[in-house]
Length: 64
Image (cartoon, rainbow, N blue to C red; front, side, top):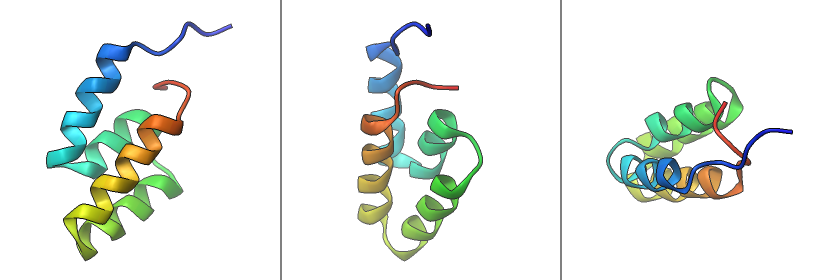
């Protein structure tokens, strides 16, 4: 069984998501559909990208 995710790393990812949302999603979920969706949302507008990144960080069980 994997150890629980560190709350400190999640807090750092939340702050990173404010400035560069795709980077936070990459660190949490690596390359995949979530990253592509986040990049598209970030290009369309900063706020949708940030909200999607926060959603991914809060719903993910841990960094890979």
